[in-house]
Amino acid sequence: MMFDLEIVMDHFLESTPSFTRRDLFRYSSAAAIALAAGLGPTVSHTPSVAAKVPMGSPTTLALADRIDWFLAAVNSGGTTLTATELAENIAPDLLTAMSPEQVIGFIQALGSGYGALTLQGTTRPQTADQAIALLAAEVGIQLALPIRLEATAPYRIVGLNVLPSPAADGVPLLPEVADIRSATATSLFDIGGRGMYGTAMGRGGPTVIFEAGLTDSAATWAGILPAVAAVTQVFSYDRANTTAGASDRVAGPRTANVVVDDLHALLMAAEVSGPFVFVGHSVGGIFARLFASRYPDEVVGMVLVDASHEEQDMRRQAMVPAELFATEQQFLQASNTEGIDLTASFAEMRTAAALKPMPLAVLSAGYNDPAMYPDGWPMETEAELHRELQDDLARLVPDGRLVIAEQSGHYIQQTQSDLILAAILDVLHAVSDPIYWHAQ
Image (cartoon, rainbow, N blue to C red):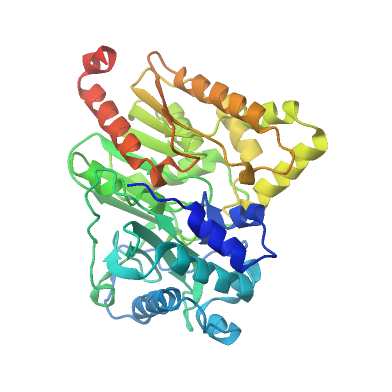
């Protein structure tokens, strides 16, 4: 299912004239408008034990209340919202990241762009203070709304995002839990005194592991997970510090090797064993490749979704004036609330062992949005570089495949999720029948 996200963005910008299109991308997952929580070095004190949090606990009830408030605000058009009401429902750090006026404009834009929103439940088991709400929009698309609250009273919103989640197989998504208030909250897996959220769906093997892009929680894959879980087991998780993610926060900066360490520890704690097929979006592609480099016997296939390339910043630096490149890097760092040291991570990837031969599908965006770059950025040259780097990723192994998502920007999972599903199914088929891959 396709949806023109430009509608939502344009309404937002009309309602907040002091907020530019480039500013908007600081608080967005591609064109899906997000509220990005201000992330500091504080580590969350969410319990990291294997028990369940009883239903009806204060935070689980507060989750439902905050979601109800947010939907009521959107569905009323946000016309009566006041700064006082926002302060009662949204934590101070979040209101520092976006002013009350900008938050009100964001809420008004959602109502204008999507129409009335209806809560259907959650897309996965929730924790005590975090859930991914599944919403039905009046325009005919489903949305994932990851939301996280303060761990203690008054339980205000510290992170929230709104992500279009078109079902990859065309079948409307069903909620994991329909009644949020009566749900038993799942706690986090302990990986050495720190909690990480991970959840498995489906049965069989290989297990497909999903790696989201920079700052994104697993919510970005909501429309794809059920379709893949119909044929094999899938595992999705939230890295530390992702927007509205459920895992405990940690101090940054962090590198790709640290991310791989966390994931490996999480898989062991969750008792999820290989072989694995990885699906990595954006910088998640770096994490997926590095995991495969470090644990080559565990990874048997890969799908890269408009994935980052370790040479991209070096190539961009060489193609534009120094001042323009510095502006682009400042913009990138401003949106990097996850605290990933990209320079160090790309260096780690350059020194990693080569990817072993395996079925590899590379999906590349059909176009680049100029709003994601500073004024004056050479977009035609950028498009040529993007294609070269994506071609290079497809050549990491013999017979790697490159597919251009002609109707998509960076977030292919929000516009052409069916292409991602088809690529995953092809890789899974090739893992069990290598002749199939070569015969295509």
